[in-house]
Length: 97
Image: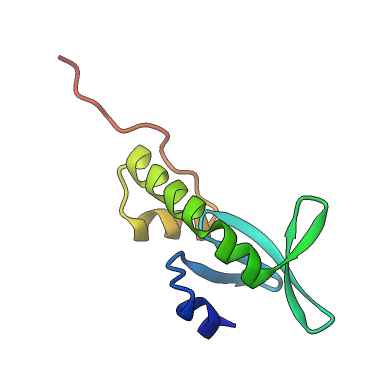
């Protein structure tokens, strides 16, 4: 599965958190194996993991950049906070003029 993601030039972080819970970019998502297909819980149903990631990876990349800008953190800092369930700062500290 991850070889397919590499071939598709998907560059978002995908990390296993626990059991069926994964961090896919900026979201914690439940994944299940259904009829030998890895599926992602989306809304009230499921979507194939590879199709979900390839279809949404550009949006997810942009969302991660927004998190980085708003929090002032690096990508690694943002992913670490999301992975560990910590809240990110909402705004960058701007000096008063």
